[in-house]
Length: 109
Image (cartoon, rainbow, N blue to C red; front, top):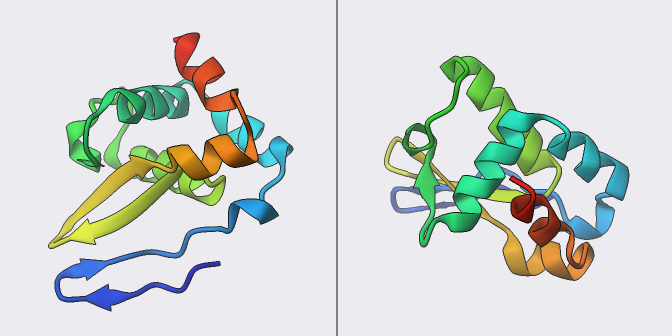
């Protein structure tokens, strides 16, 4: 796990080392259509997005859970800017650990 850091107004929650993530955990994270939607939106985005910028058909607390599952599966990185939690895909790291999987997931939406 990466230790949270504080630098100015930016905080970073812990993220797993992708070398410790198994394919089973990734697939379980991606089985949910809401989480696949989040991954697809982040894949298409040109920059990190805050949680509220992604329109989801679930409550805020349920959305928070989905973001947490994706972070724990190593798919997304999160950091705070002020009070906004920003989200982005860990594309390069993820593609190195699981070649072609991310593209297969977003290509099927």
